[in-house]
Every structure is written in structure tokens, then in C-alpha cells.
Amino acid sequence: MPLRLDDLAERPAGDAMRRGWRGRCPQCGQGRIFGRYLKVNGHCPSCGLELAGHRADDAPPYFTILIVGHIIVPLMLMLEQHVQPPEWVHMVLWLPLTLGLSLWLLPHIKGCLIGLQWAKRMHGFGGEPDHA
Ligand SMILES: [Zn+2]
Image (cartoon, rainbow, N blue to C red; front, side, top):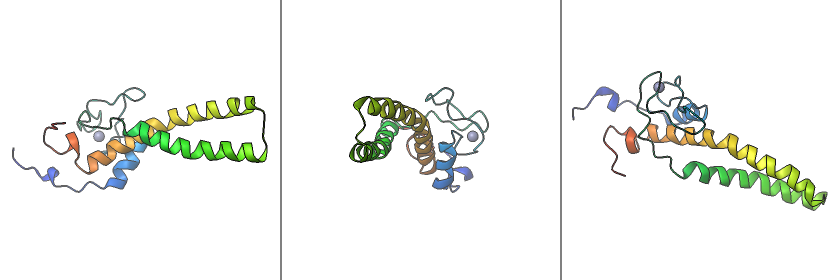
């Protein structure tokens, strides 16, 4: 396979991850990564970058659980320690907050990881077929 100039172009990871966080293509920053909630488009609708080669797999839920857990659990413990509300307050407060924060965070983290994989030429973004 002949080497092309864009195969050697620098791919800043920070920019790519910020674009992914916003749900935009890591290469052009214009086209949407997701066709539906977490369904990644095959190609960027703007620049044509092949997005199907990503391997986000279990990493987005892992990081989402890690982050949401580190936000919700300390807040829940502080509330219990200082206010000691009845259990129904915990149920009404923490269940929707945990669910909402998780559902909001998941596509942002997935986009961010796809951006990182593109920037580091990982998996299907390296110009070679991925043999995972
Ligand atoms: Zn694009």
C-alpha cells in the first residue's frame, strides 16, 4: 500500500477528543459521529472519514460508571452524614440523578475515546485493517 501525505499528518489528541466530546468527527470537527444515541456512523457525513473502525467497546461505560460513582457516592454520603433524610429522599434524588448523568455522559465519553483512537491511529484509524 503506497504511503500518502495525510498518513503522516499530525493528529492533536486534545482537539480530536474535544471534537469527539461534542459528538463531532475527530478529523474535521463538522460531521456528526453518532447517527442515533450511541450508534456510530459508518463515515463522517462531512469529510468522509471512516468511523466504523473504532473500538470503543466497554471503555465508555467503564469511564461513565467511574466518573458518576465518584460524583454521586460522596454527595450521597455527605447528605446522609449532615442531613440524614428519610430513605425516600435518597431514592427520589439519587436514582434520577445517577441515571440522567450516566445517559448524558455516555455519548460524550464515547465520542472522546473515538477521538483519542483516531488521534493515536489506533485500531481502524491507522490506515491498515484492524485484526482485533
Ligand atoms: Zn469529518
